[in-house]
Length: 229
Image (cartoon, rainbow, N blue to C red; front, side, top):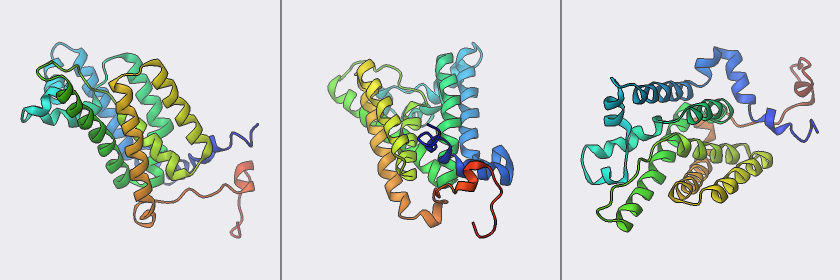
């Protein structure tokens, strides 16, 4: 069983190596900055004195796309979560998905993936809503989920791990069955965006990151490796 689940340890190798070299912040600076900003904006949303500021920067609705500069809220929409369970999920996702991906592909590639993973599906579904419901008031479209789904897809592509891919597809299937709505369509588009960008980044892996290397037998057992290994 341990051998079958080895992929759950293997995909985190670059992150563990980065931790040993420079500590948790330097291992994934964009990930922890994203999480800290999410927690700050989400806390402001809950406070009477800060709710207005959080709304101005991040409370995105599809109808904002027709008004400038309100359309810029689509950028901040990824760092606003409105429920404690979403904040907890964002924290876990940062540790399990975002930080390992950033360590594997490098911070520039990670920022590119996160930005496009949020903007492409959010704007696309927003335009579809405007076309299908002219004049209607769009619901809030905020949260870290598009970024996380895009990065999870990129991690599956980058690591070429069948286990991670199966877990990702299982999660998407559950999402479709539980809530087949525009949010689910947004997640599917985020998945496609993350996978496509990761395929492109792999072609320039030498510039962006360190490839995931197979784990040696000694590394799996915890034994020190000789220079020949």
